[in-house]
Length: 223
Image (tube, helix red, strand yellow):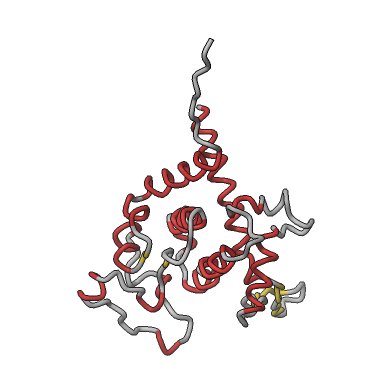
């Protein structure tokens, strides 16, 4: 009896197809566009110039209008440098990072400037990583930060990002804001912590979210 060949998409195709479905479910524009600037963020998420994403921490910037011009809106400008340029990334890194940022921006708690500036570095980091012949083929292959970490919640991808931050001259440490509490006598106590390598934490978040999205897609497919 002759055997009939059955072509089945390999797991990588199913994984990337699931990520593209996640992106398209938020907005097909995110899938079609490889640069997300002011127009895209406002159109898809309703993020306008009043958002914390465009705010600046320096007091001199308070109260300054940053309303973009009509020309800026039509060109999808990166207002105040805020935007996402995926054009420098090869596949599958491009789709993986699009899915990560699409998911992240859908949650208002992630729409502030300082966390954005740390997290958007993932694009430049992954661009350089993709040129490394020893890099894994997909970002998700670096594994869950807890299950595949070095016992301290650090994924191999985070370790690589820490090295990259040092190479490009960016700080790997960030001071957290002062925390003011009161002791038993009622006196004020000011605590300031310095978390080592906090700047590389977005790499952990990236692999965690990619694993989460894959598991959700697999669960919905099995249902």
